[in-house]
Image (cartoon, rainbow, N blue to C red):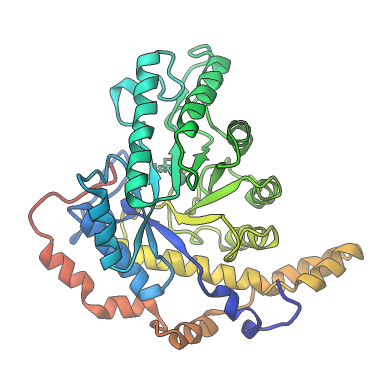
Amino acid sequence: MTSQSGFAAIAERLEGQAIELPSWAFGNSGTRFKVFGTAGTPRSVEEKIADAATVHRFTGLAPSVALHIPWDKVDDYAALSRFAADHGVRLGTINSNTFQDDDYKFGALTNADAKNRQKAIDHHFECLDVMDATGSRDLKIWLADGSNYPGQADLRGRQDRLADSLATIYERLGADQRLVLEYKFFEPAFYHTDVPDWGTSYAQVAALGDRAVVCLDTGHHAPGTNIEFIVMQLLRLGKLGSFDFNSRFYADDDLIVGAADPFQLFRILFEVIRGGGYGPDSEVAFMLDQCHNVEEKIPGQIRSVLNVQEMTARALLVDGDALTAAQEAGDVLGAHQVLMDAFYTDVRADLAAWREERGLPADPMRAYADSGYQAQIEAARVGGTQLSWT
Ligand code: PSV
Ligand code: MN
Ligand code: MN
């Protein structure tokens, strides 16, 4: 935060901002009612990476791509890393998947059957092997584990088994690797979820050690939850590992970040900055976790990273000294106004100029539309199977 005013004072702090893209955002996706196909959708991991690299080329904001195993399974991950590097990006977070196998019907890392639990643990070992080959830092675990009916499961036993399973995985982490545990309040289970909230995730990772942290997915809370408070608390505890950004109107909608509630995104980013979670010295990873069901996927990702950048700029504009002074003086409306002044500042023209100074297109959305890339992939990617989210 700065006591000077104006965009010039914060321009440098936008340098180096990085927002990781999820490989699955480039595949076709939908709801349980219908998955709509989009022309030009990737047919391979390489094509997903090429699309992610295109987002980076037009925005300068997305230097890495997260993979999901086994959706992005290949024989040679070192070669895939080289492919990414040749396209100007790198491979980032590795996401495990324990939600599409019959053996996990009653849970994965919490399953009462030791055989099924070991299978889920082994899958995470496989993900760690992938990370060794790609040089990835983060293993992200989101668990679908839970139950649908009161009495169906032993809640306590499942929590204990989860702790054991995570400890076994944690032991295998390399010195520079992290285990990132994501929480979500419901779905696919509707009565209880084994990692439903930040407190459970925090309790589990705190028991593991320094290299275990929490992932906060902005779409994974009950309506009305004060997410920026959670951000503050996790930063205060040194356990905020990463964000999965998206926006939602109802539940886990996975819509474009900043689309549903730009003010909430601003408030979150303000707490990130205030708590030391932003900038070169921070270990907090920014990532998108979105699906583009009806809109084009590459422009959807471009819009998303630009939204994060725009709200970051506005949050950086908050006059920290004036805010503290007003807070300490008990000036309720004065403090509120300091925050709102920054939120209502239109930074779009300044950001366009900032981009041009750095050799980036002033308007990445327009530049992409004019580039011909969309027509090119639509023409080239015929035949083969278009990939879908699952
Ligand atoms: C399922 O809710 C989910 O959207 C989680 O947010 C994960 O991060 C993502 O899928 C990928 O596994
Ligand atoms: Mn997520
Ligand atoms: Mn989700």
